[in-house]
Figure (spheres, rainbow, N blue to C red):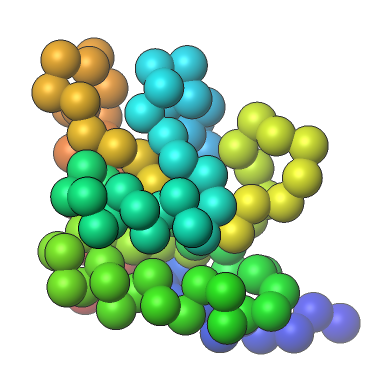
Length: 119
């Protein structure tokens, strides 16, 4: 029996797959920061485009500051499962901005999709 998630909004299966694909691409473009501390740094520096958080982070307190900081910096947030191309679990991912990157159009489209499910 699984416990209900405290995270909201949670991506449906289709959006989650698209997010994971985008995260893998962003890894190759070096436009990703992994972990709650690194995500916090990108938010504070103003370089974060999208924050993706694990809905199963334990303890939950390690990610509780991120939603408020995202709202303060006007950066969309979304929960995700365990995936980032690393062999351990990741509680938060920040997709960072780079206007010269080929990924910026995809990142902006994903931000729009995330904002639609938050409504």
